[in-house]
Image 1 (cartoon, rainbow, N blue to C red):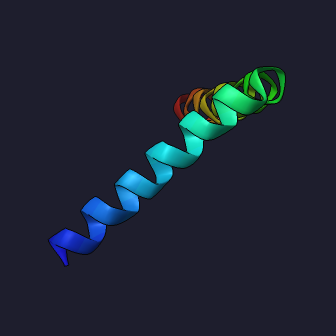
Image 2 (cartoon, rainbow, N blue to C red):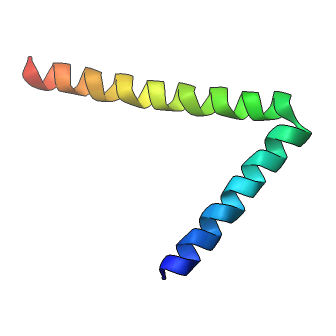
Length: 54
């Protein structure tokens, strides 16, 4: 099981590096979308907690 996780991690790392090297603009767009999603989720949790306290 541990060996499978290592192989999967290596495949993901190689894929990410390949994507960054071949299409840096697209990779930047994907990172921006990801961070916007995380930011939106954090804001939603913050709003929920604020309403819960009130």
